[in-house]
Image 1: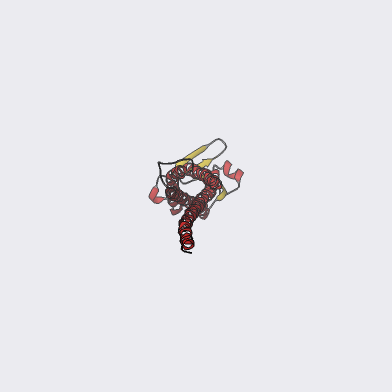
Image 2: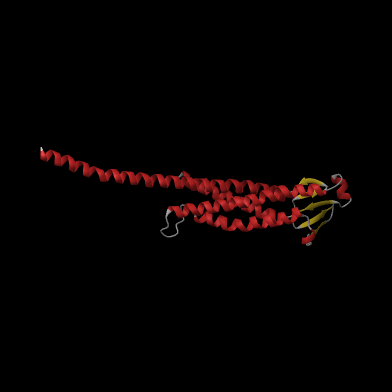
Amino acid sequence: MANSCLQLSGLLLSCLGWLGIVIATATNDWVTMCKYGLNTCKKMDELGEKGPWAECVISTGLYHCVSLTQILDLPAYIQTTRALMITGSILGLPAVGILLMSMPCISLGNEPQSSKNKRTILGGVLILIVAICGMVSTVWFPIGAHQEGGLMSFGFSLYTGWVGTIFSVLGGSIATCSSDSSSSRSYQENNHFYYSKQGGGNLPAASSTNHAKSAHV
């Protein structure tokens, strides 16, 4: 029962973490850029938001975005963020599906428990890879933006990416650890059955030997 609760918790955390990575990938409110004060930047139309896909200008009555389509001219941190976030978003879908098919309430024919444990480990490892992609992206992007100058604050998308990364780390770790504990328990049960079977097989031999001795006397 405890192992089932761990697997369910790992699945839910993994789903939330993957969802956070997808939201952060699809939005552009990563950092707020401004070289002056907030009110001054708004009056001068120099308050902007920057993400992996576009740069936006925010003013009193204007919100205008320009897509970053010059791939070869983009800085390395933007290209790396794009590649890692897309990779994490794509890997998250099969990872969540694998964890879902590894739940104790779902059975694929007469498969052994060892196959389900291996599938759980595979799903947990994929979720951890998603977390690594999100971690590198959400840390490197604000550092690169700060080096360009004018970084004022972090945006909603960046916080969502951080939360998604944390949930993915927790979900992948719980899924992997629950599979290890299940494998260990299954091995102990099989080992106990083996020894008990051996002991049961020796008792008749011993009793027959004693019976032969008593008959000889």
